[in-house]
Image (cartoon, rainbow, N blue to C red; front, side, top):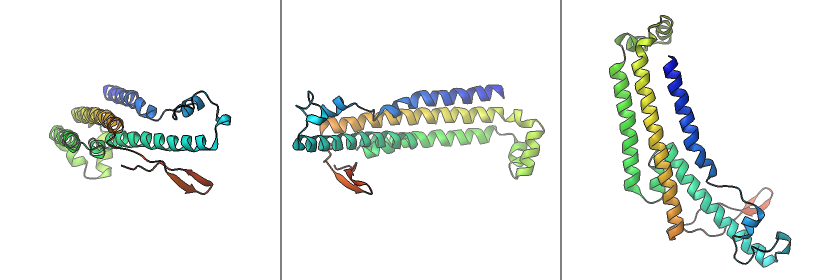
Length: 202
């Protein structure tokens, strides 16, 4: 069992390391970075901005936030369901391949686990009491191959999700860079007044 726990710990660590870039999709930026969104305002302070320049800055910030959210949504969608982000970014063939791969991984994992599952364990799974008795009896060691197959399937599924997510993010950024997806400044009302919206327009 200790090998199983070690494998699961490694899987969680691997997931955390690979998911780190997801937190950096919308990095915070300082006031100078904010002013750099509008050409000609880099050398000014916020207090020096005219009303027209503040309006330009507000528009630029709205567009930037919408673009950031578009990229984040694509990455998170593909991480939750490999291939979904590709459909969102206009790559249905690539998305279909990832979805088929994920379905194949899950199907093969379940089939392999069922094939390797001991007959008495299958019977014990019929009720909670029999399953508890089976676990207490110490027979769970016979299920280690099944657990190994399940852990392997989870690892492959995670790799598929990470790869799909990274490609979806790259595709979203390419759409923005090429002009295939554009955004317009938007304002939305809130309980505290007016604020910039993050709706997507394309």
